[in-house]
Length: 135
Image 1 (spheres, one colour):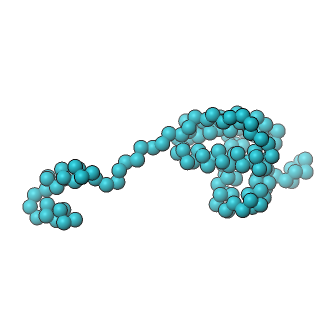
Image 2: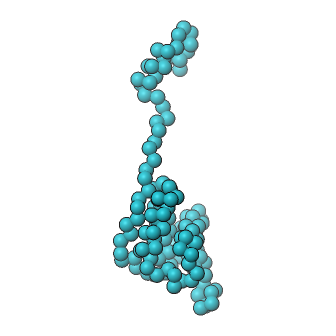
Image 3: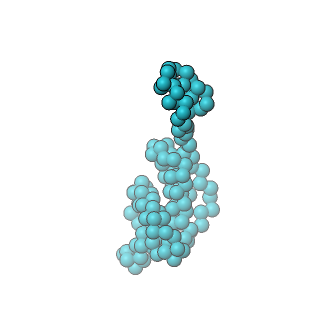
């Protein structure tokens, strides 16, 4: 309990998540994101949680720009914070959250293209080329 007789914020988050049957892994992840959010904004009490849309937007933008997180990581952080405001604090987030979106990383192919395979095989002579062709 805090000084005003309310349960601690993270205890409320855990209770709400268990009430809604979230997995323990999701619970731990959401609690961690909420801790990071509170630390990022140097919040000392519940009164610091007002103006949620603006603060969430600033935090998510920082994650994308400075943290260089993936889009799925940024989405998970957003889901945790929306859960906090809507389900725990019972505060509606009426404004839009227009954070800078994290960039998708370019996926490097894990196999050679047909042309690349042909090039490699043409560079090998004799029995080695036969072995590579069989493989």
